[in-house]
Image (tube, rainbow, N blue to C red; front, side, top):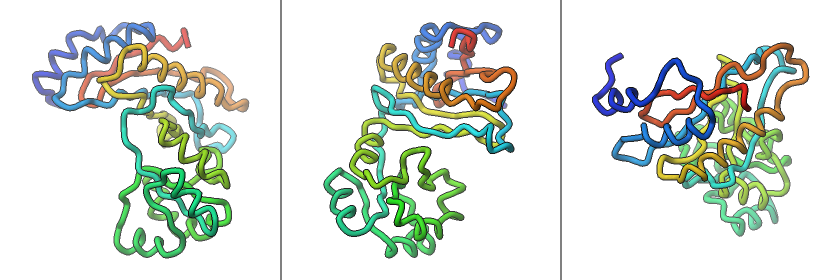
Length: 229
């Protein structure tokens, strides 16, 4: 794969053989983010889990202390008083059954997170084939199936992110933007890693964190010393 000049220059700053301390990695990932836009800083965590076994699945959510740097659009499925509560809490879109054809037939997906009250999950379940593959299906473990829609919306708007294993047993999570200070990125990284470590499945034998890599949208990967985490 051919890389551009900026990537090549940024890659020279990174020692591929070295495992960096978290503070060093955070400082370096900011230096290697040289694109003209505000790049997203991501963490990729390769685990020793086998996601084919339910007891080794990892899924949850964590509120990053300094947010993600991204404006998140929230859709809430609710009825009755909960519709008004969701609107008052700042949901971008609120509705019920009438939204199903708009999403299913018209391909409307102008939202980043879906929250639903438990009594609406029968309705939302019909969207499984559309929302599931995009990782948008509400889930109790992620706090997106709840009667407390105000808390759910506030947390999401404050910088709550979901983490889950992909098919390769890797977790991919954004922890901020290149424009963040080192301190803000470090705090977000620490909050994420604390949540991931707590989420270690009790059924897992052997090494949990195989590798941890920090990267910006267009930059090279920086290996973090997972032993220190």
